[in-house]
Image 1 (cartoon, rainbow, N blue to C red):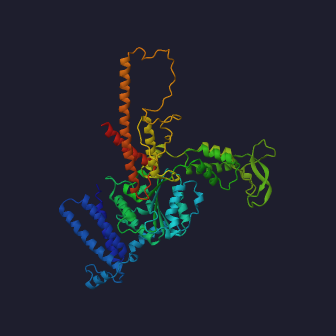
Image 2: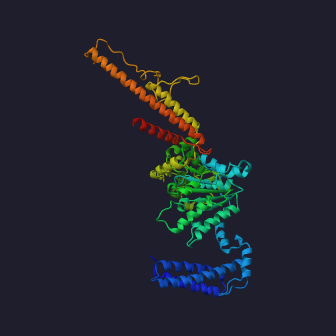
Image 3: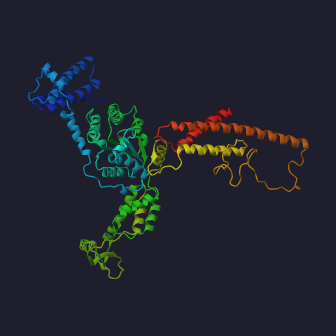
Length: 591
């Protein structure tokens, strides 16, 4: 429920608009008229009591809107004479207005919005190269396909071969999503890079947020090839619900239209999004990001490279073995966590200088000129060291301090005081999202394709069926080979046509009585017939089941060529399809 001051505020705004109109400040008057009408409409909805009051307010709104339209027409035409309050445009003026093209460049409102977005264009490159990003080969390959290669080899991307237009980078915080965007901005020399956040696109004025989104994409199309990087895209494009505001819904709708809507030509425009919580994204927005790449926590090799990168040229005494030990101790740390560990370790020598009570003289390169060797440099030491001089850093000359190197103890001390920032619950959600919709950033192409995997699974099932006594006719192209590991015990080949695999039983002593010794001959015959009948029924049932499995895999094999060329099924998806077929057939057979 709105407060009772809304109607009074609307009256104050239109009063001020009238004053600006009289002072010939038409742009400000136009803005105030529109703003005042919004408040009047709000008052009609929540405050006005009775139909008579509502009709009176509506009549005033129509007058103010009529005046606002006249001011807008005047501002577009750029007349020097003001429009009279009671006069409408003449027929000749209307004809000229219809014939003249209202170009977007003459719209002062659009110029104002685009000027606001000009600050999102990164002019100075961040100087982050691909080599500065440790690991994430899959993400770098996808970004090169979408950004670098289409610019360098445009003739490759013609016809049906089109570069990616939407890439979503998702993963735990601190794994390098924004850092990858900086690398893209550096490496894409001929592209215009837009770095925007929610604060650049959300406005307090009604209807201005979606205009900012539209102008952002129009600006990107005007400066193409261009890259629009939206950090924390989930803050703008979360799932639509009944509880959200109307303005948030309109922003999402405008995003959907601009990214992949009717009449939206986004050739040469790449939308790059980054988020830590991809599961809250709207499903339509998620679909428009054609590539969804998971940026995982760094592995041990990537952590080793990160330690080397963050140390840089800083003086240290650590060996390769020390760095490998640090990489193994930081399992579960993100790239940001490792950066904090190294930065804290780099401050340990400074803390030694602050707390030192004694210094001793050493020789080394001068702090001013590294090429000059000085013999009177001072370094912190223990009071018991030979040549120790009692003094503090306050008494130390600025150009006489020898930089203490970073040691392994410094790194271990910083590591002990730093904890990983990644939550285990979020990791489970990210793994689930990756399994359903994503793609690993560090994964390499699988050696076994989807169709080959179906063949292997089917052959494995056929071979394992031999272990239960199912006869399979041999052909010239069918070679008898042992099944993959796991279907039969190692060292026990299948026996074709038998009731099961050969079981190497221990020979029993014939003198020792067994459970069949006391049975009559007729009882032993009856038991043998029952056993043979059970094995025959079991073999028949298994033969029917395996034949049904063969049909299932044949259908699955037919399905694969019908998939689009860019649709590559993962092993998990293949297993899911196979399990669906098998579960259905088991249900039918059991019934």
